Image (cartoon, rainbow, N blue to C red; front, side):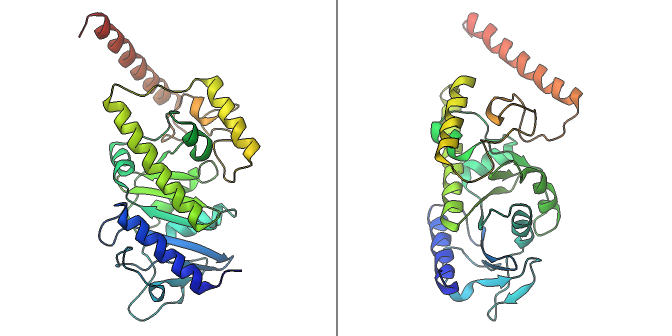
Length: 271
């Protein structure tokens, strides 16, 4: 079993990777690792993730209370968000929060990452919904995040950033990389006229590959929360809207239909 000091070193290494890749600026972002059901290591508040050393890392209990912290350091103010993930997802061993530029731009624009455009994204990542905005360091973020936890392994935080979780630290970091890469490709594809999406049959084949690989996590192999008997990528519903009223759903669909018809008419007119 890896000792705590080694895990602290790994957290510092991942923090530096996030910082060096421009996924955080200044003192942004936070990382945590589960040691057992009541002990968790986490990054401190108010420090750059690119310049941490093991003595920076704090230890908290399942309620976020400090168990150990060196003088001058205290746990991240966002630890409540991490604890909610661990509480609702016993399979999770690590949580990473960052502000990668492309993914955060989608979060600011209110656009979830749900379009099936790459095999790797569909198989390993799944849909990435948007959790409604909450004030940082308050219970608003974990409360608004909670409803997405049973169905997804990554979320965008509205006007804030991205959050990923996985069985271990490296996997949680890789998921953050995947979210940002997917967002960048989707952005560039939109600039080139719009992405070509997989159809339902292609998506189902990719889901079957995921099941055969036995990948951990809750999505996309599980049922979508918007509709029963359909997976997220082909449900037709926006993943950033949960328990939406039927009238609102109809309005959203009507708007999409009008936009599609307008586009086709303009193409026929050569505009």
